[in-house]
Length: 120
Image (cartoon, rainbow, N blue to C red):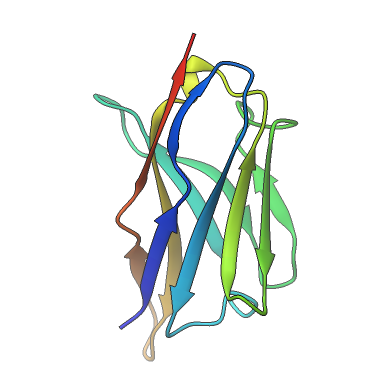
């Protein structure tokens, strides 16, 4: 069973920084696409950033230039560096990967989430 464990959330003032970590087990983060999502109270879960097995990255427009997704293959961990945080970044952040299965389709895995709160 794939496991994703997030950490690094907390309370920070606007303009501050946090680094989230997602430690993976039973998969190799270097061989699969990984993503960070977030969900604020009352809102739908939204995609924040992705990194492919080849290292290509994408970002939501709302975080471009402020957030950076990366990975450490030796630690089998994916990171989300968040700079210049804004109150609207307040949410629970989730790590995600989709594992392809035989016969087509994929199984979606989520971590338990880590809370980020940004005060103004």
